[in-house]
Each structure stands twice: as structure tokens, then as C-alpha cells.
Picture 1 (tube, rainbow, N blue to C red):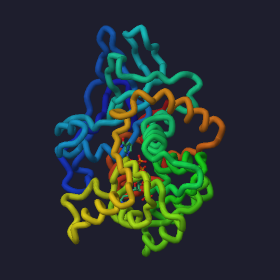
Picture 2: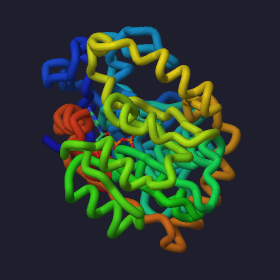
Picture 3: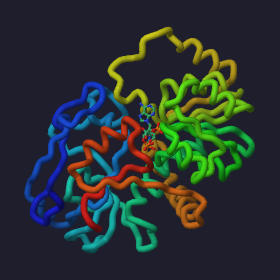
Length: 344
Ligand SMILES: NC(=O)c1ccc[n+]([C@@H]2O[C@H](COP(=O)([O-])OP(=O)(O)OC[C@H]3O[C@@H](n4cnc5c(N)ncnc54)[C@H](OP(=O)(O)O)[C@@H]3O)[C@@H](O)[C@H]2O)c1
């Protein structure tokens, strides 16, 4: 069923996942399209961003953001058209970035929107390279990673919107860039299209040995997106004064307990101490909202000049969002995952 002018379809959190999410954690509901009051806008959502952080919102464990309630509309960034406006700041037809969630329509008072001007290259880019993931890559790498020409930078989830951007900025800064990705096709893309120096397929054996061979001078910046076995392979290769922006640990998002085995915390602490490593987590809009202007100016220029390549995977239909999201947490996406809810 496609978008209708009368019915608002929404996908709500039906139950909390235990481990990996399954389709029955989501439910499609239908209600009449809401009516905007004085000062409000009706938004028609066209593109919906699917992002790893949504897995955290489905759980009720303490985190940096409030969990979703059961029966609440799944959270998410959208690029939307203003369908009706009772707010003088917006006209019907304007493109805006909003946090409307997994649904066809939403009401906004206009305060939480970002208007896209006519020069914006493509509306959906506001969910990726010129939006939250691009901003995350830019600030995490440049502010915390502090890459310098000649250094070695390693990044996993290397063809996703964050990893691909991190690696390409690293190349612009003169680093040797080694990606880690799931599959030969992703690795070819990282080298042939994104310009990485090397990319290792983590689905093949002996990752630690192959990583050591790909980083003969050690690792100066490890941009952490994944955690788990990949961090284990990186740890012994870190150089003195290495920097680790801890952006995400996606390999752990579906786990239900800490891994069994020897306690490796003393090893980690001793390496951090002896090598004077700086490891810092960050949450992009909490920590860097004040630097959004700097990011958008620089990244828009790089994209316009063809210096940063951007790959999207666009899937049609709101009803396909749950399956696509489940796949994102298994590495099935190739590029920034976006749901096209309706025609522009
Ligand atoms: N701190 C922040 O403010 C912030 C903001 C945005 C994103 N993030 C984090 O940044 C990271 C990348 O985000 P993204 O939007 O660019 O996602 P993404 O790369 O499009 O998607 C996730 C990728 O992670 C890899 N992956 C998934 N499950 C995995 C597993 N179990 N083991 C190893 N790899 C796995 C897969 O890539 P391969 O197939 O290549 O392995 C998958 O394609 C995530 O950890 C996310 O939570 C943090």
C-alpha cells in the first residue's frame, strides 16, 4: 500500500527485542492524517533514514537518550515536504529535515526543522553525507582522531555512511587509510571508488594477521564503529599516542550479555597507559551541535567538487522499513540505508 492523502501509516514498537530484532517487534498502524492547528505544519514524509542507534531506542536499558515506549512510533530522521502550513516561516512545498519517525505524516510547530534550500544537491543527502552520519564522521575524525599526513587510519563498517566518509576525509588529510568491511564487493568499492589504500574483508579468517600486514607502520587513528573482534585485531597494532574516537560498537548492539572468556580489561588498560592512547566516546548532536555550520560548509564543498563519493541504498515502501533495519544490523546494507516512503 502506498502513501494516501487520507491515511497516516505508522510503524510502532510492538515489543522490545531480546537479541536481534525480529519483524514481530514492529507493527504497522493506520490512522487519519492529522490536521495542523494555528502555527503548525503538516509534514509529508518522503525519505526516512534507518540508522544503527534505533536499536538502542528499542531497549529500555539506560542510555544517553530516552527509550521508545511500547506502541510509540519508531524514531527516525526524515526528509519531508511541507504539505500544509499555518506557520509563516514555511510554505507548502518546502523541503525540511525533521524527526518525524517511521510514518507518512507528522505535525510540527516548525521549531525543530531544518529547511533545505534550492541549492541542496538531493533531498535524501540530508540524511547521510550532508546530515547526521556525515557530521558524525567529520567531527569524530577531525576533532578526536586528529589525523595527520603520513599516519595510518583504520575504520570498519567502511562502506557505510560514517565509515566511508571517515576514510575519504582521512585520504584528504594525507593518511594511509585501511578499511574493514563485510564482503569482497564492499572492499572493492572501498579501494576502487572511495580511494582507500586497502580494505580487509572481516568475513575471511586471520583478520588480525592481515591487518598487521596492511598496517606495517602500526595504527595511529582507529575510528571505532564496530567493536568486538575488530577492536581485538586493532589493539596490538596501536602506536604510541594513537587516538580512538569511539563512535559506535555495532557488533554489540544485539548482544544480551557480555562475552564469555578471559577478562581482557587489564590488557586494554595497560596498553592505554603504556602507549598513552586517547580513547573518547561522543554523541554527535549532544557534543558538536555548535559546529554543524562548519561541517555543512566544508562537506558541501567537498561533495560539489567530487572529493567525497557518496553511496545510498534506497528501498521503496514504509512497510519494508522493519526488514531493512533488521538487515542493517547484520551488514546487509551497502551504503546509506534510506526508505523512500513516497514520491517526491
Ligand atoms: N556516536 C554517534 O553520535 C553516532 C552517530 C551515527 C552513527 N554512529 C555509529 O557509527 C557506526 C556506523 O554507523 P552507520 O550509520 O555508518 O552504519 P552502516 O555502516 O550503514 O551500517 C552498519 C554496518 O555495520 C557493520 N555491521 C553490522 N553488524 C555488524 C556486526 N555484528 N559485526 C561487524 N560489523 C557489523 C556492517 O558493515 P560491514 O558489512 O561492512 O561489516 C553494516 O553495514 C555505528 O556503530 C553507529 O551506531 C554513532
